[in-house]
Length: 460
Image (cartoon, one colour):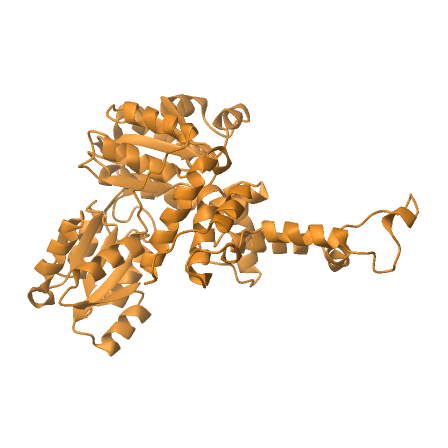
């Protein structure tokens, strides 16, 4: 993890930096916000910024947003000045850390804010073979394509390969190709010169240059626009890029890992993805099995998430009960590891007993299915059994749900379905699009339309 510290902090800066270094972070120090912005523009990337409350936090965060530099910011200051802490949070900081620095507090903030987990739980035979392949190809320079359903842990596997590679001491840079609008992704990848377009207030190095000497993860590469695919292909073939607004080629030394939850061969056949780029990226293919294909890992994964969220929320660690474990084993896990993680987070917060009880494990879909079974077994409200009904009378399993749709337009029902699914996925666009069976681009267009109509759309 890369930590950027901004400000003097009256000598405590070195102590905070040493703690972060001991926790495995790489630390860069900047005197002020202007120097920090310059460092970020020039490829000195950071996974987290820790800034002195005496600095101009609000304008700094505004500048990050304007230049589309996505990095979480935490504020820190001497003592526990409540007024300064509140103002820092209001200005956009995610957390406030009082100084002198407490080692455990800094460690907790680093983990919570970056949400970075390097755990690789793979005891199931289906997963063991995948890890064995990853171990074999990691030391090479081969481009890797990781495929699998949404939520199977493709980014975790990417980080695992990076840590096992010869580039482990270099940067690991991840770009979500589905989350960045098409007109901005080129700048994000290749960088730009000052004045290249409206809002380009200075030269900024792209992710290719930021990842130089390390690994670049192109997450959900299948969502990249065809025109940009051609530029990506050239960058991989020629091992050089050209910033927007410049004619000078820049040499790069980057290993590419790409991920996709789609069948790319089908996308190639449909003309949605370039065949030559597909072959360039698919030198080595690693397919991650869905969670339902590796059921023997469920217990260990569940306990891992219980321990993680217990620590984050300051709660005593608990073991999972046999009843809860059986309930987890019985579920299909359409959302894979991400769904399991969210489920166990809720269970940790809701558990009232010494163990994680079955009642605290609320699994979306399972409760509604059980309720549907109960409803189907209930006597007919009119006192007429299904056998007594006329043969030509249609059977409606959920009459209340059907009646609620009468009189509404298709667009209205579609909007409710999209927003409800997005809420179920906690704002994760890729997961929601996968459940709805639409592309992430279609989902983004729908959400933009809803915003223009004045409808509240959850943030990503």
